[in-house]
Amino acid sequence: MASLTDTELLTNLHATSFIPASLYGKPGVDELAGQSARLLNGMPVDNELFDKQLAFNLLPISHELDDVALGEKSQINQIRKVLNNYDLPISIESVVVPVFYGLAQAINVSSSLPIELDMARFGEYGVEVQEGNLPTPVTEVSAESESQLTIKLANLRHSYGNYEQIQFWSVADNVRYLGALMLIETLEILINDYL
Image (cartoon, rainbow, N blue to C red):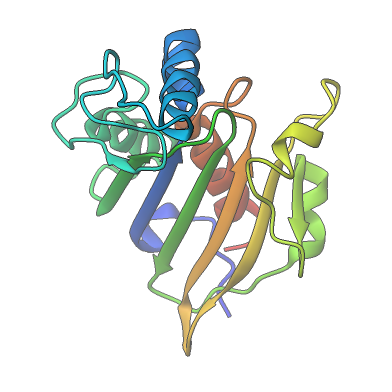
């Protein structure tokens, strides 16, 4: 099993981010609330902020978007900078989902050597690993207290039969914790202490 401290042993990273309406601020929350209310009352929706209906829908974010927080290129550059590995193949998908608050991500990381998982140490870094009870933006993020900001991980595992690859699900409060920061901090912990 590998004890990675050199980020050059990473061979690939893929992240799918599920973006809540609140990442667009109050206008995003208001538009989702208004669209939901209108649809539940049998009325057509108005699209002002989003180019398509968000309520009861999923909106993929264009990879060409230049927005600092949501842009694929910006997120990839941030991750590569933190990892100090500018050649690492990274793929990111971002989807705006019809939830008000809470960011969720599905992450897949590969290395050139098998990865040993030691989940007990995550608590030292403000990361809570949950087994059996999968965190969601609604059930977990809303329960967080102001004094304890945590990333919640679940389904942390080797990819089926591939010990060089791990995957996991993560959830955090996006109002206090942006997606790229969440991903970067999680990867730093994994790389520095587990891989």
